[in-house]
Image (tube, rainbow, N blue to C red; front, side, top):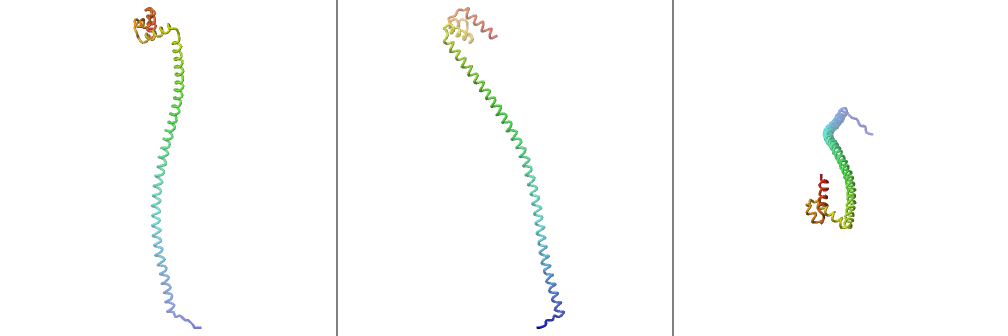
Length: 166
C-alpha cells in the first residue's frame, strides 16, 4: 500500500482552505440571516400596521352597533306606538260600528212610526202637517189655510212651539 504523507505546509493550506470555506459559509449564513431579519422586520411593521387598521375598523363596527341599537330602540318604540294607535282605532271603529247599528235601529223604528202614522186617521195627518209647518216657521194664516184648522188651534200649536224653543 502506498503511503501518503502530508507535509506541514499542506496541512496548513488545508486548514486555511477549510477555515476560509467555513468563513465563507458563515458570511453567507450571516447575509441570509440579515436578509431574513430585514424581511421579519418589514413583516412585523406590516403586521403592526394591519393591527392598527383592524382596531380602527373594529371601533367603526362598534360605533355602528351602538348606532343600530339606538335606531332599533326608536323603531321598536314607534312600532309599539303604532300598535297602540291601531288598537285604539280598532276599538273606536268597533264603538262607532255599535253606534251606527243603534242609529240604524232607531232609524228603522222612526220609519216604522212614520209608516204607522201614515196609516192613522186623516185628522192625525192634518195635525202632523200643521205641527211641521209651525216648526218650519209658517204664519198662523198659512197653517190655517194649508190644514183647514181653526185659528185658536193653530195659535195653541204656535204657543207650544215657542215655549219649546225657550
